[in-house]
Length: 65
Image 1 (tube, helix red, strand yellow):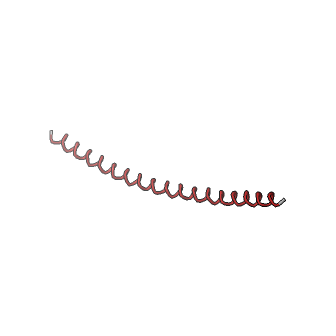
Image 2 (cartoon, rainbow, N blue to C red):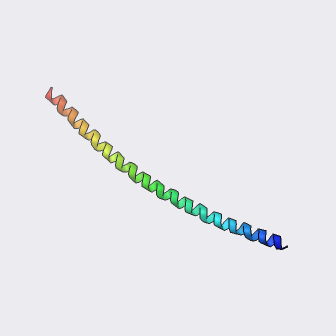
Image 3 (tube, one colour):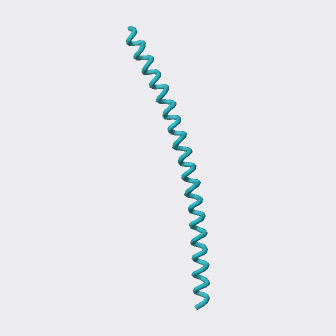
């Protein structure tokens, strides 16, 4: 009887700890996703600016010919 109570208490504790762990992992993944998205957006804007600059240079070269 005492073993059954201890086992059920242990399993309940494991379930609660597992739930909190999953919640924390989900929050960590969500924050990481937000950071990566912001970083990728910054790279994208920088790349667009570089392409625009190159297009301007190419059009100036074409006009010079």
